[in-house]
Length: 360
Image (cartoon, rainbow, N blue to C red; front, side):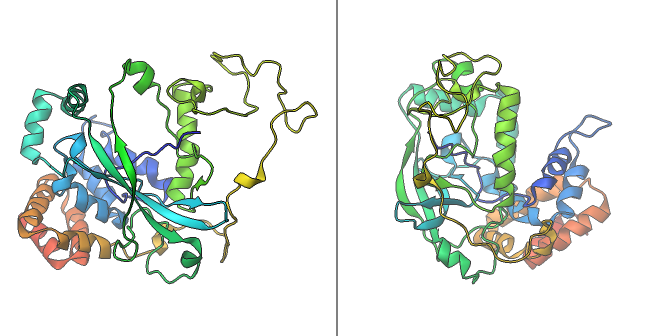
């Protein structure tokens, strides 16, 4: 079975509770009356969801608009797991570091290009591969023994998608290279029908208690069944490059032999595939009470956002603040003031800069 690695452009996300994902998406889409993009909806949601501050700071900064798809890093973002035959169990985070170098474009340049060629990023990537300039990324991982995580010595929730692990404590370890070495032969067959899911895991690969990841384990295959069909995993672009032993049968648009005369249930007495416990993930020790997850109980939404702000030089901070001011300037005052308080908690210079830009 193949491993579906679906990197984000950031190492963290705007929400940590999957039940809020529909609300987040609604706030970023179009107004239900005007049908227009609406900054008030966006900033109202963000200002009432301070866990979004870390990614908002990244997206409104220089790295928010990459110059090309090849000039950006990629991140698994979630915490995943790996284990070996000895039963040693690890939490891991995946990182793709571009070998083309980080390059970004300004808001003004992005607006000009979007007006002239909405397919700019797709075209640039296609043409680069066509002429043999195959983009490459170095694959790195951060590794933490599960036993170390059980010690509960961390000041963050290790499975919080709005946070990053310290690279000083868990440095990046290089493990390989990802290269895009050919373009699709047929766009529909190899792109539109591609059906990724974080649940596609080869032996030794697993997930984690990350709430957002747990939701994606259900949402992605559900979306693929609706979008492509119940037999999407058997399509050439999606199927594993190894023998598959499954009791999955029938369904709309079954386009292979459907298992022939092999048994269709398990257990059976006729030589069908059996479970192999040697591939099982090591058990995970659980402590504490089981209760409804309340993401609001974790309140430090500001330390890492402030650290990110302070990593920027003065010019980069000024561009970040200018981009935010341009986006939030027509939003109602009560929302502006609420959001500025979040900026202030991350770094006083951050909040003061936005307030001055808004003449508050």
